[in-house]
Image 1 (cartoon, rainbow, N blue to C red):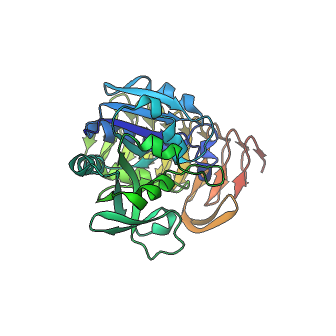
Image 2 (tube, helix red, strand yellow):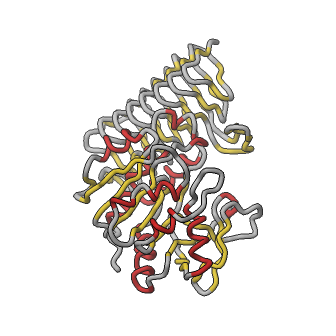
Image 3 (cartoon, rainbow, N blue to C red):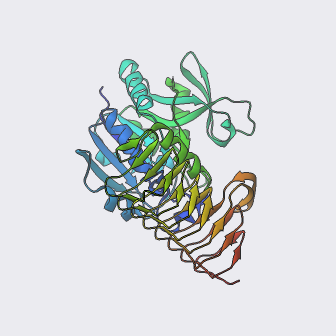
Length: 397
């Protein structure tokens, strides 16, 4: 049976990416100068998918308002997961919207078109109970690990406790049409319905095929991962504007002063402006309507839409959300830091600062490496900021 409908699981918040996900779901965070989910949709369309069914939940309007009813002339249908009760539960919400075998992907990971094609081809050739992409990864313990024998999945380890595994579940699946019945029959674990639990049940009585894939696969689990995503996108030139020069992309509606310096790879989005003496790049993405003031320096950073960096500021290894204002002379020197996410501290992560949506820094603010600033926080002139700053907080000198 031909696979022509893709189900995209995009209902989650991405709690480990807070505070960036306070106002939008993880799939709508930027991979360079476009949302992660836009890259996923591109890969599906280019792989020949004729319909997209998008499972939305947390802040669902941010997804639906951005994409609308079609994407690149391919119909997009939205279904709601009102409570996030696991990946299997998310897929089950698409039951009434899918006829025939579904191809299923996560909406928050960068993947290659060739991976999707390989999984679809493997399913259509052999029609196993399921086909799923597997790839080698140096940190398999962070993801669902796989044991593979003669292209058949023999073991699926959801949360491996060691790094002895080398293959991971890449989160690209093709299923028989009865997968929805199989999910419905799967017992819940602690109230949640995991897709991998259903796959494990299929393995007990049928053949689940592993499709060995290679290529780009990036999962933004933590804030610093958005910097890696940006680097991967720029390295492959997957930006939404024409190239002006090798490794330098400037949208036709952007303005870059003759005295500014762009260092490849770098992208400057539509309606953005780079002032005289400013240095932008390498490994830097400016979204829509971003302004970089005179003599400012921005390196190894991702700045989302409507962000303004005033004159003389320096940002390294920084992620800025939407409508952020960085006043003159502000410094985020970047480098390695110990970053607290929830109750866990991650040591030696390269992260300058995270400035969530609508953060304002009045000027001459200094941000220690690893600083996470919540939405709408106000950093007053001359403030020294470190650690985690709460939403709406006022930080004085």
